Image 1 (cartoon, rainbow, N blue to C red):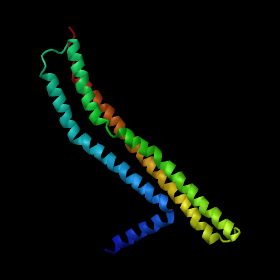
Image 2: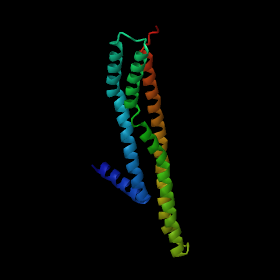
Image 3: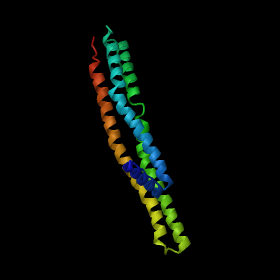
Image 4: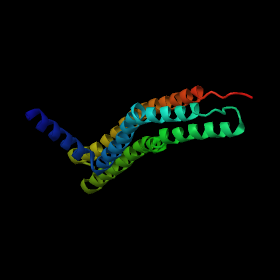
Length: 176
């Protein structure tokens, strides 16, 4: 139990030193990673059922060469694609916003440093260090959140493209 209480205490101190912007970054990262985990889960479970359903619907057709069959094939692929790519744009926006929130933390921390300098005449380094911490910790958190999000987002995009290519390849078109 001591390990967990020390861990939570360290996290609490870190969050306090980073200022209120760090709380916003934590919420942003929680939402981003929740969406990413949901997409990875979706790829392993629901998406496979959608592909099986689309392929069985396509294979049940006798006509696979007419214009109407091409339109139906495209509709089946589009339906699976929409489900597969539904939250990817939101994830990409959250990845882009992470460093911007970090920059917001930098600005608010530096405002605190300048305020301390104005009040004390620039002589109290201990008080200024709190503002510097509030400036650098959110910047670091935003960058780490963005970097980890970029890697995971790219993995999701590659897997999504691969899955759609697989579906298209397995829906053969008969030419008349």
